[in-house]
Image (cartoon, rainbow, N blue to C red; front, side):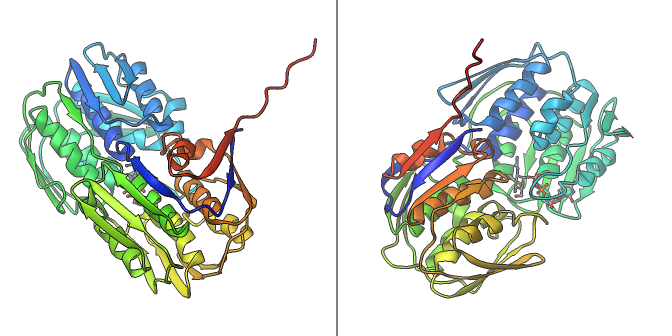
Length: 425
Ligand code: EPZ
């Protein structure tokens, strides 16, 4: 398996452009199934998860090509609503294809996505929402089959502001008969991006970004050209990396309003952050300060997807901090690896107690999931000595060649692929 080798201790400097948001592009690509014809989706990052989504759309009969961050998608040829199991297991968030496929074909077959390194990843809210819109759902083994002649608008109340469930219900309701209101909706910027894309195709919905979304079903949608928002989690990852290496970095193609809680926390840690339009400058010349308590929760609060990365900064901060993870029950897998690099972290249920240390030391560590892997790269950039990060494929799911991104900022970081053993005859 590929690995990254990092020589730590160099302050990051220079500028880098933020690529498009994985978690906006995925639902937008799924929603494109709802309108037959040619879509052109721009600012799409070249990531493993994006390629899995394109493979799923091809398996459903579409033609799909990603070239220079633009996906050209021909969905008229779609002829199946059966999402292949082996592709679903590669990317559990493909569960939000249920809404689009149910709307287009009146039928969809998917598979229980199952848990992962960060938690159980339940889908009960997705299924309840689709049932409320009139779908019948059959589960046998790990196969889920959904049917609906035509979905009917209704009031749906989410017990938890699930991002994926909100997206699934929005897409299912867009072509349903009548009006749907989703209360308790997720408020992430990616939800607003999905609403903007659906409305550009002719849907009629308002309220994304608040906890109540109102959707008036329409008869049909038309294919569009669209450009997704920048990736706020990649932005936050770079912000933390600049801080822990005591660097001075300029980030381009940023959307500061998507990062209010992250900017607030980093400023409390003593990081200097200046923004103008879509430019952000991050500067940290002294040791970061500890932050008494950070609690991850749904947007607009501090995002769970930056919890691991922020923990690296707290591990090097001057003082004791507490990080509480409330979104995923298993999202502390990076703690053991950081401890092996010299961090002083104690976990008690969903809280991590972090006593800052003056420095971390290079070690061979393993990425267990996407954001934990990114955190270990950041730790390697800050550590003294050499860090080897293994299982890099987890990181490639959400970062387009992370070594190039940091390399452009002066980091000494290289990817090594295992030498294929030649079979001697
Ligand atoms: C999306 O996942 C993101 N993925 C995740 O990013 C992100 O961490 C998460 O939202 C929270 O912001 C994509 O957008 C592709 P949820 P999703 O449904 O939709 C529970 C990354 O690193 N839940 O909001 O799966 C669930 O178990 C990834 O880019 C139910 O109980 O997240 C979890 O504890 C990781 N029942 C919590 O809600 C349900 O039906 C949040 O899940 C659905 C969810």
